[in-house]
Amino acid sequence: MSAFKRVLVANRGEIALRIIRACHEEGLEAVAVYSEADRLSAHVRAADAAVPLGAAPASESYLNIPKLIAAARTTHCQALHPGYGFLSERAPFVDAVTAADLVFVGPPAEAIRAMGDKTAARRRMQAAGVPIVPGTTKPLGSVVEARPEAARLGYPVLLKAAAGGGGKGMRLVREERELGSAFEAARSEALKAFGAGEVYLEKYLERPRHVEVQILADANGRVVALGERECSIQRRHQKLIEEAPSVAVTPALRRRISDAATAAAGAAGYRSAGTIEFLLTPGGEFYFLEMNTRLQVEHPVTELVYGVDIVREQLRIANGLPLRIHGGPLQPRGHAIECRITAEDPFNDFLPATGVVRYLRPPTGPGVRWDGGVEAGNEVTLFYDPLIAKLIVWGETREVALHRMRRALRELVIVGLPTSQAFHLRVMDEPRFRRGEVDTTYLERVGAELLAQDSRPELTRPLAAVAALLAEERRAAAHPPAPSDGRSARESAWVQTARRESLRRWTE
Image 1 (spheres, rainbow, N blue to C red):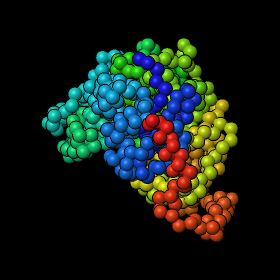
Image 2 (image 1 turned 120 degrees about the horizontal axis):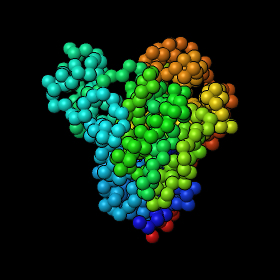
Image 3 (image 1 turned 180 degrees about the vertical axis):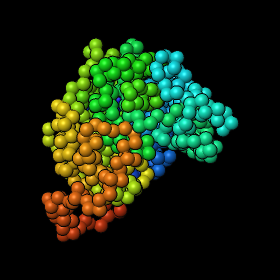
Image 4 (image 1 turned 90 degrees about the vertical axis):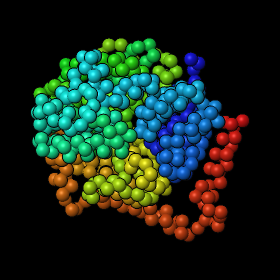
């Protein structure tokens, strides 16, 4: 395989910008793609060239495989990085990329297929000696098949989609009389979400932690585990806050769970960056949950604690190069925390919010990292995930990291639409969280208390931000733009010229 020099980044927002920066640091050229809604986004300007995909809906842009392949060919790319979400875990997409003689910066299609079928993955892990949650290892054809299995496991049990993830096609069943309706509901939701209605049963574990291990595997067969992340703060199976390392994991447990993760990756024939997710019980037992065959949203906390640039390693692996990580067990250094800053109103059941970001001032200072893809003037729409940015901090200890995150959240200013900022501030001050007493039911138990107060002092706009916004509006009112054809009013002439010249240079 010849080394590639130019990469198409088949994604948007903060992760596209993150990958573009990694490409440049590896001496590679990066090509962005964008929908009509993202034409003025930061990732478009950061790339060496950018190709329009079409209208805002993802089905017409970021999920359109022929358009993505055409964009790579037109700009003479040799590789494609999918980021996360969208098509990143779709084996047919990997097949299309490789059929177009492009390098896919990610795992082989066979590994994605192997781990995408949850029941097949459970059988594979069981054969590799990786502990799995007690339950069935084959799909259940009917509720008649499910009843004796549920009785064997003992209620409560979980019905889960065999082809799914993210909580879709999942139902908790606490007693036998609920099984029939839950089975049909889980199967129907799984069919709509994934095009496959197969479900299986797992024993429901009471108040486990969600702990996952980051792995990197190169083409030479070397698999490295970069410790664990604590991802127990979730809402509807969607992660909100992540940490590395976990306060519940001792050095001895870290070795055991890391060994299980590397065994899991080896059993899947894995290559690239991936994550093995586990459930950790209060008694210290851990069980394989699933494998994410892609880059994770929360990868920065691992990067800060282990000093490894995971995206750059991904690019090297795809280029056939060995990992740059030294041998022997890796030890975490310090503590990192990530808060997902989303366009959602936590005081209104986390209802997604839309609108224009009127003013944005990210926090800065020692140990603070802002992975953002939205800027002042950008519009947040319902077409895509509500993630605005990831705010990550590092400290010598967890206590230092908590204080630093609290400080960074107070410095952050976003004007124009509701965000999750106030929620995160309240979690940082919540006594149980500060003591590390968390599990996957944390928000169910503590959420109402956290969000019960009517007053929202955390959302008070700093006077400096308001003054800056008002001054900007006064300047705009005093000097209105000249009449134009409409498009140039939204996109300056120099931006249009630069984009035309960039595309011309890359397509000649």
